[in-house]
Image 1 (cartoon, rainbow, N blue to C red):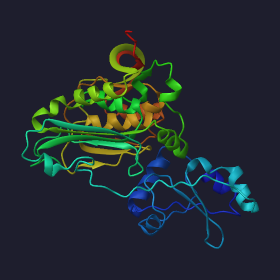
Image 2 (cartoon, rainbow, N blue to C red; image 1 turned 90 degrees about the horizontal axis):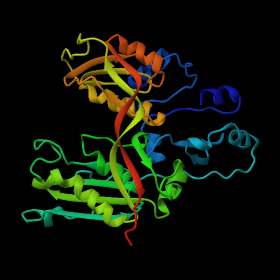
Image 3 (cartoon, helix red, strand yellow; image 1 turned 120 degrees about the vertical axis):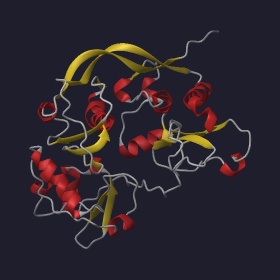
Image 4 (tube, rainbow, N blue to C red; image 1 turned 90 degrees about the vertical axis):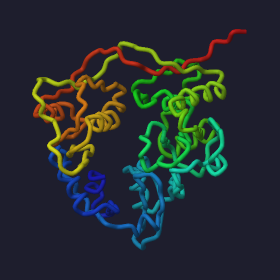
Length: 367
């Protein structure tokens, strides 16, 4: 965005708008600048909900194209923000851009979607589950209460636990069903060995990916299980998926794969939390974690760095306490990240490791 603003500074103004506070936004840009990224030249608006209410959306970025009179010319995602489209708009040429229309009204994520909890209450039910096609009611994602402590607000005084996955592909459903708290499967540790690999997996993004899901490739799945059977929830989900997708099989196995590993470089504990408030300001440009488990940092690094690299991050520290850590580096810059981690006698090193991977393969016919 910065380079486009510089190139067309006489003709356009790109203005980021957010509901976040000025302090939070300025802190983000400070971290971004410390990470040695070119400082942003964009003016931005903070503490604003007017535009998000006028132009409702569920995912970001969300771009509104306005002409000099404030008329809406287009509403798009990031893919359409390029020099060619901008020049056509400036010249007044006709241009047809796909409309980004992804707003989904909020729903109560604490209650079943396809089942009436009142009919479950005070019955001897064990489990109920359903699988539907893509639904325009929801975005793409999942939520679950399986594994939450009994005192957690979401499950206290509730007779059931649930898993709800919405508008996911078959592969993503299997990734969720095999993750079961102790394991986490994403594209960096999933291998597709099917002859239909191009049909059951898509590299498209944005509106193109949604269209792909809508063509009988996206599914909603909900499982509601009695509390005393929650330890069986993930195996129940896997059984449901096997029944609905009989042409495929999903299984896990250990494979030696190129990996990155988080290791301690000494026995000195330099990350032990000193107490205080819980703080988590980690962004793509670093930040601070205070009074959280190391697994939070691992999760952020996996999502921001290693999933895009399609390589697993293996935690070899065996550290189980709460931590305090500050990182002043762009997370995707591994050299800079390691310089920051070295202050805490930590390092990320490349190794070949035996890693559990999820394999999606064609089912072998026994006929």
